[in-house]
Structures are given as C-alpha cells and as structure tokens.
Image 1 (tube, rainbow, N blue to C red):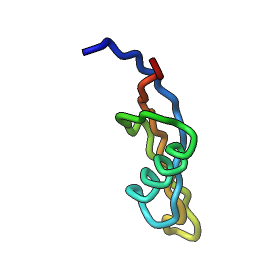
Image 2 (image 1 turned 30 degrees about the vertical axis):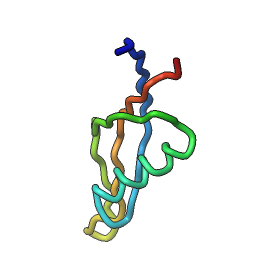
Image 3 (image 1 turned 180 degrees about the horizontal axis):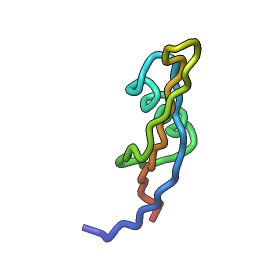
Length: 69
C-alpha cells in the first residue's frame, strides 16, 4: 500500500430547501473539477431570513481529496 498525500479545500454550498441539499449541491459542483474526493466536514451553517422565515441555507464544507501520484 502506498502512502497517499491529501489536500483540503473549503467551499460553500447553498440551497433554498435545506441543509442536506446545500451539502449535496456543494459536493456535486466540486466533483465536476476535483478528482479523488474522499471526505467532507461541515464547519459552518448559516441561513438567510426573509419575512420571519428561513429563505436560504448555506453550509461551509471542507472537502478532502487525494492528490495524484
């Protein structure tokens, strides 16, 4: 087994429907340009309030991925 090297990037995913969708939206978008993604970590959760109700969700994600050999 070889020793791998990893890198982490930070992104923000958003959604009007909920936290899980915000996470999924962020990961799906990142997957279009980042190869070998292995894990994610939610580091912040935010929301936008409009007229007394939650209108928008945002999550800050750290995504770990393996660098090419």
